[in-house]
Amino acid sequence: MKRFCQNAMLLLIGMYLAFVAPSEGYAASAVSWSATTKAGWDKLVADADAARAAKLKSMAAELASLQQQEASLDARIQSAHDANAKETDAVRQRIKTINAAKLSAMATQTKQVRSRNQPILDQYTKLNKQISTARSLGSKTIRSALQTEANLLKPLVQIARDNIRNQTAAEKSLKDATSKTAKTIRATLAGADSSKKQIAAEKKSVTSNKASISSSMKTFNQAVKKKDPAGASSSLSSILSYYRQLNGHKEKIYGHERDIAAILVKAKGQFPAS
Image (tube, rainbow, N blue to C red; front, side, top):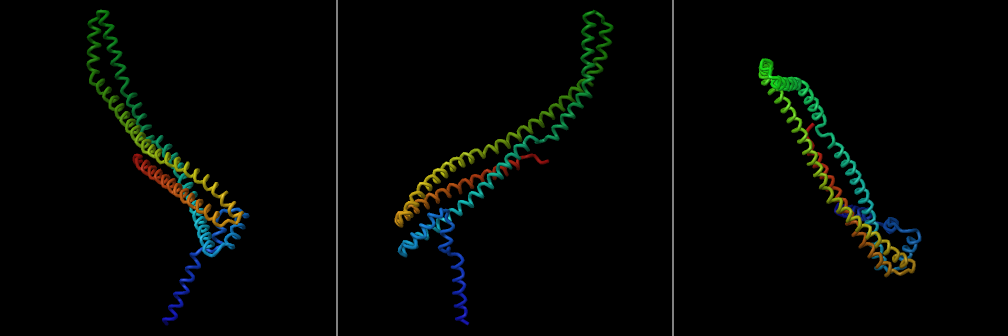
């Protein structure tokens, strides 16, 4: 029974190593090399001593891994960027509709209040003009009668003025609140500008790393062509270093896109309840 357990354990370990350890073919084929470079590389590794061959294979496997990481980062960055762009546009469009129904209803109500109360104000204005005319003509009887009528209207005029003033104030208050909310949300969105600037800076670094990788790859190809394992190893080491830096910059870009997404979530939370 003990021997059976030992054998089973050895079998499981063997299966695990076979699964996780990259084969020579996988490590080489996963790297983005031309057919000529691939053929030269395989020959270079085959002709190298065991220690050198092992190191070259390890470096190639790391390069393949870094390239796969880059592809994954590119996909995540693009997805996050597209989602943020779409969400930003949606938030900006939504800002234009803040309290739209309430503002429309309020404008209608203000119009109705003015329509109901303005006739009394117009009548009072007309009476005062008539009183002024009667005074200039020296007609005390007419002036007295008109003044009595005007005095009777005064309470109604005050009510009319109050109605219009209160309604106008309520409409202005809603407009001010709407404007303030829109301003607050726009200010929140502006917080993404810092992340966008940092993304632009990281992209410049990515471009610089790509140029360095391209230059080192030319040197690497020449070393492979000349069957120079030391030169190939040195160039590949530089390429790996640049790839690590490149992926680091792309990780930061993805992080900034996530920061923008968080800002959008905050902005959406600032809209008034429907």
